[in-house]
Image (cartoon, rainbow over the protein chains, first blue to last red):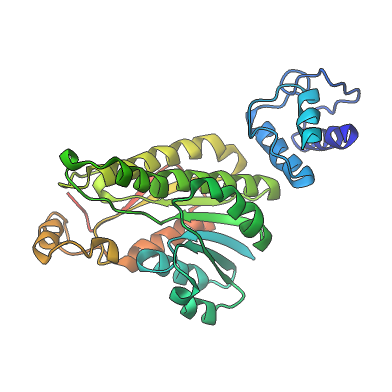
Length: 75
Length: 241
């Protein structure tokens, strides 16, 4: 799952002309380390929901890569 | 197929909007209203592949997520949303009834916002530069006795639309409102002829607003012809003053 989520984020970064992130770890911040702004986070939400059937922002804010994985694994 | 969601598809302005959209074979319509399929049989017969009707009570705001994930999403990618359904709870303010007011805000405002949420999410997922159109009302711009609460729901949607446009413009998603004057539909059926005359006298053209003219303005805002128009309102009201 971690690899799949990282792949989706990197696909989005590439499409937006931003640099991909090679070494991903769970403590990385979505905004500061992956450079995702609020609209990109919205896009990530719908892509993850399409892939895993989970809305990661439905019951609160997520800030780190690890929190995303945690939400996806919980359901 | 370019699918457009239209709420309140079974009568009045909504039905006219659906007919005008479907006259272009490029589009399909997902119609949503409380009414069962009987009320839209004519449309189902005419456009069996391009018209889908979903019976749903827009008062049930919390069920919209399921409506989207289990039904709307499976039909196809969303190119447009027309928030047309509305309840009219008309009374003077001193008679305000909270339950009636809440019901109206659920249908006119909360459900419209919720559908916008899922329409935008669908557009993001499918990378579609879609168009959202809310049906407002001239009462949000010119006061009428007894319409303050109804007008407040429309004013809320106009503010929501302008900010939607600002928020999602960079993704090519547009949001606009059409502001109709009084039309001869079931929504104005409770008015007496005298009341209607008084209302029509306040328009430059001294008559009721044509439903077809309102619908074609909606279709224009949905289409690529309006690609540079967002965050605004189009008044279709015979020049109400």
